[in-house]
Amino acid sequence: MCTSIVVNRKKTIVGWNLDILNMEYRVRPCEEGVFIEINDPIEGWMPLFGANSRGDFVGMPTCWPYDGRSEPKSYGNNIIMLDIDLLLQKKTLEEIREAAQSEPVFSISGVTFMSALSDCNGNVLHIIPGQGCLYYEKPDYKIMTNFSPFKQDSEQHPWMGWDRYHKAESMIQSASDDFDVQDCFAVLKEVSQTVCPTVVSMVYDVQERTVYWCENRDYGNICLKRY
Image 1 (cartoon, rainbow, N blue to C red):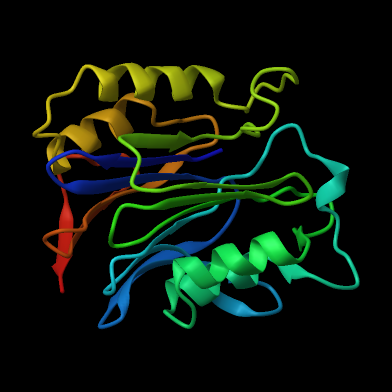
Image 2 (image 1 turned 120 degrees about the vertical axis):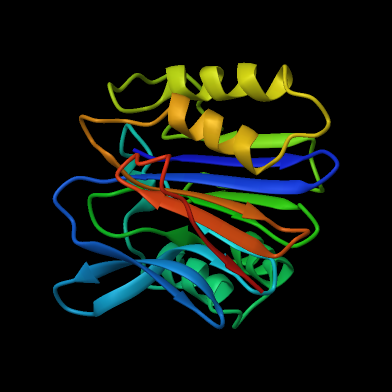
């Protein structure tokens, strides 16, 4: 599942719910950022989501329904490696955008991962392997759940998150220009999940370079790291 939020009002505030099932994860704060890592049986701990000290944020929702056009190809860009390159500051958002626009982007076999990326200026890049990418220069807000923005609700799946999208959108549209960290946590709490559980909720105050997070929907126990 998962929900990604970017709001540009008086501040740029980024929110992320990581909803996963039967996967080992950890939150690792370090000097380069606060990374949510997944323990891969082959690669070990992989930093796949989170915020870096430069002001970038990486979310990677799964697209439901799966789209066969995202299957691995003999050339092009693996979406996981693009995300890691941004998260670890090996490339900028603009470089990721150029790569996604110049060559095919693919996911892993049988799963269509999408990218919900943003930078310190509040610019947003959504990448959907096999379908394309959408770039937004400092939008008022952008939300991504688990359906393709190219397809909207033309294809149905129980986990596509259409309801979560509209619930988050309604809350953001009615919020004031002072939309801040607590407002973002309120949205994340409202769209959090239990069937495919929300294991990490993370909010990044980009202007203040401060990352806040909690685990397992424990919204009364927030951790933070400043840069």
